[in-house]
Image 1 (cartoon, rainbow, N blue to C red):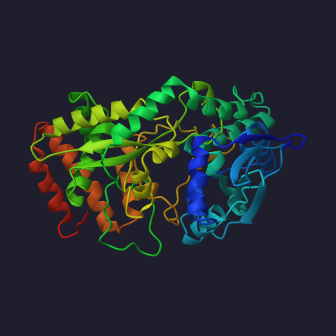
Image 2 (image 1 turned 60 degrees about the horizontal axis):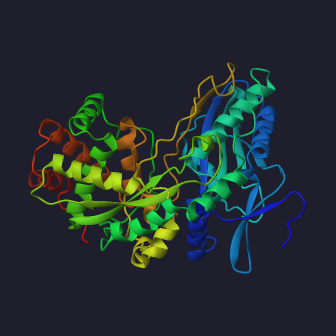
Length: 464
């Protein structure tokens, strides 16, 4: 089939294939899961027209934002088209205070409105304005099929760069080093290499007979769960120092230490001593892709094993080896891992599976403040207290270790997706307790540490 002038048709990348598979399970039901946003508060004399022009320039700059996903003869493919202006909405803010519930309800409504994947661009913007005080809140929403967490930061940065360039504060940004269509071709070509053959041989053996841990929550979630990333459960400075010190003693990363404590907690509560722990990578092995908007996020699996006779130091050492083995093949498409291991595919679709995967992402954050839009406007990242939960896969819950300081806040977010505040707080407090105890005694037996789990949770338990 010949593409119309100005269009380029390509197969889906492996990451897009996974999302398409999930959408096929629940057609039209994945908007809340696959619409992703960044939000900024902006104080000062922002030029609205210049801001919208900057967003339009970014659509022109990034081919992924001009990409649609269509089906033909049963096969999905992506079509890169010419520049089209995105939907940009301006609404008076119902309140001068951004923490009001009606503000967050409005943001969630606009975020979760479904995209028509056959019509690019798969990006839209909402600007709430409180004119008396020159206060604004910007939400930019992109469909996950053409973007990921890393891409949101690239897009945020580029909107700022284009806005500043229009004011003569800096040159207009050059085109990305690698066009999106080349990224797609490279992603597909990587599946035909000897490295891919090694990954195909590795994953079935590594996954083996282990299953995703099944741990249905004992407390039913409220109708609207609170999802907060504003630091409710941050580690304190002494706790951060303890985790980092323990990491140094054990020649591991803070991720490995916190994930080991979390894995022990779930394993004990779920009555399981060997299971698979889902995690994620950002898929940007090639540094030329770092300034690109694309869907390069990829899940993969980590083996987790423990026994009461092990020490915490032994647990971290074992987990470290599991991480190192799996991470060398972290780029391999998860959709193909599911095809290689059908039992795993069934487990991942089960709504009680894959709870609390850990995340190894280290997404570089865009500088905000007066740096984003210039000296007249002060921008700050804005996070919702509440959002809907609609992911078709329970990899929705994350223990995200972007930085040690954020670990407990993000853990609370993850727990709150399925449980109430009390259970979420117990999970965070347990992880802190285990890390602090191990920092004093890295050789402490796990049989002693599980007592800490029992004390924190009391009668709140899970069953496998």
